[in-house]
Length: 131
Length: 131
Image (tube, rainbow over all chains, first blue to last red):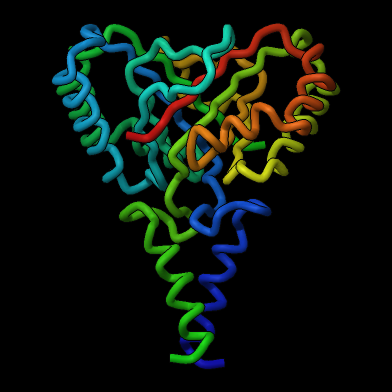
């Protein structure tokens, strides 16, 4: 087996971690999901929204962050169980608890809080570990 | 370029969609995140928890579900902003709003609700679209 073939086999194994039927662009989701919802003090301020998103994007640089998703309420069907009152959704994916701890204590995370905490009036965090 | 080489190039392009610095096992997260939190009626019942998880896992079969993450509260640091009161976290990832709609109306989803709705006392759904 030549080097190209071996490298292809490794890449193929990664892609094979994808859920059955899933798009080939998606592989296994990391185990620890850190999902944070922010409610802005000024929910109608586009500047504040842009500032918060800009701050959030710096967090992806932290070395234990495996992937990230920054979002807004999606225009899915309105139902009693759907909470679409938040301003911004931040999801960071980690391999494990240790990775999340490195992030919590990281200077880039601390700077984000220092720079942006004045923008929000409420934050709710959900940490979920895959089972 | 032979077929193996071309296939490798395609696989490599997929892996290159990974966040900078991320593990090669993670590629781009789909745009639409559907995150559901369940609070069981009997939060201490391991049987009820197992039944709910078994039901949830059937949802991954729905063709528009690009990836899934089923989890429990992670033992991250206790902080005022962290809500760890829920029993089960379900995250389904879709490419777009249409994919999520197909899931909502899908017989597999309807059967899940029919089989499992008696298990929970509260559900909160957050739908976030990447920005």
